[in-house]
Length: 176
Ligand code: AMP
Image (cartoon, rainbow, N blue to C red; front, side):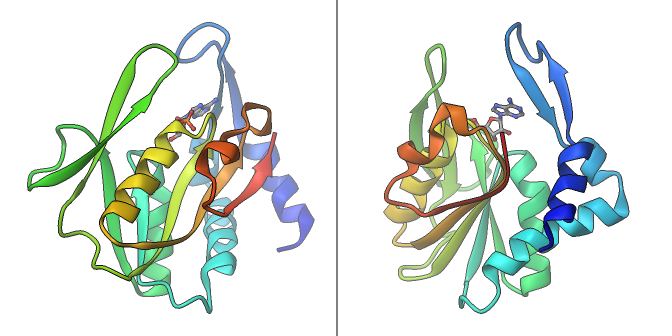
């Protein structure tokens, strides 16, 4: 992917200061989604990293991971698995706890979502502290999935989230 595509995407991501609370600069990806060319460029970045790797399923994280992950799965011709915040999935689910800035939260995945040995790529919009995606990685491995990589459109490098994801390889396209 030419570096100017990355720069065009970078210019489109909108910084929203003090959202959802004071001191957080929220990276708003809705301008990328609403522009047909930019949405395609962003999905193509993920696809380039996925093609030729015999992936069985894409796992996306609630909720913005669904926006990118499902498009990537569709284009690869593989299944899509949602990992959701606790209480949203209708069937039996495995739960993983993770820490937030204050307290704990839980993510869950249906018990029959992944078959043992399936080759999985995890997709989300943004890697911050890594707590959410590390919990997703636990769920994938617990189900017997082979987690090839975690991929993010955006990485906030100063939060060192990829450390929390070790030993999972991490790819991100826009680094801040
Ligand atoms: P974390 O568990 O800290 O890596 O947080 C990751 C999740 O929170 C991702 O699914 C993001 O959608 C969201 N998130 C965290 N920080 C930001 C931010 N500064 N801007 C936008 N989304 C964020």
